Length: 194
Image: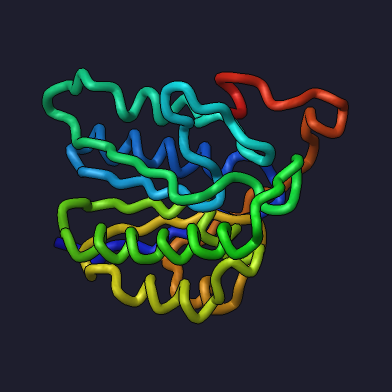
């Protein structure tokens, strides 16, 4: 099997998560198994629970990817959210240490996923955002990436570029914002933004 790629999507523009979700669908269509681990963004509330301040509804692609009915001749896509929602914005009142603990737990989860060797593509969505928010250090993130099995593809997203991540990445794409509806007063739209 050829070397697995390290894929880094970053930038201020919208579309980084959308890009890796498309990558997941493409990989599954090629019979690769995919695991998506999402940092920073919150998990879906359990039945009877409400979203807390700073939390956003679960993105609808996860409903599709996690649907019980699976098709034949495609890879499986599994996902898990390890974040607690937005950090310090949109009314977030959680103690910062809780966000740090969630991010560090995400690193442990990613290591377990790597060790399982069940997946040909692992996506660490918003991993770089956890780094930007200082929930994790660049040293911790690079240490995790170094533990990836040689043949596994790995993709990660965030807003900023980091020299160490650029150095270990095989494919880097910057998503640049030209125009965004939020700055015209249009809030996130179900099915488009989440």
